[in-house]
Length: 123
Image (cartoon, rainbow, N blue to C red; front, side, top):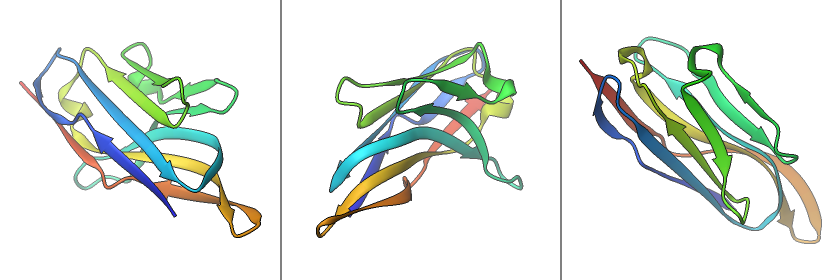
């Protein structure tokens, strides 16, 4: 089993900054990708940013230049540094991971989601 534990959400004024973190733990062989999605009320969940095993990153157009995704040294932790926050960034942010896990003597690939952390940007 693998768990994703998120932290760092909260309330911030427009123009402010927050940093989210997410750590994966469990029977992990390797991590293909980790990232962040978000879901605002009445809207579909959307990709915010992702970092793949080789270190390449991808961002939603709406956050480019404002958000930065990075990994910890152990590569099982991912961070999302959010600057110049806007009202429209308000959402529940979910950590996502594509992980190769050890199942008995085999390796299997699964996708995992964190429980979500609320980010609220006020005017």
